[in-house]
Length: 78
View (tube, rainbow, N blue to C red):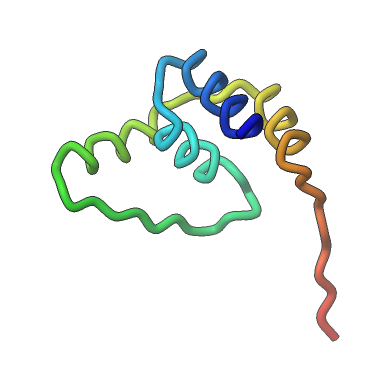
């Protein structure tokens, strides 16, 4: 829960919720080439679209990688 709480604090510092923050983070990761979302209600779609305009400070990307233990890897085929 500590990791989730840290992510919630980051999202709140940007005046948004965790779901929108997570979508915005995903959209800005060059390793991720596509993002599929779903919405069953107009309010959910509106919330998802907020991620397009959310600006995440560059320092947050490093903090999130450290928090989640992300390690870059390279795949060589052949």
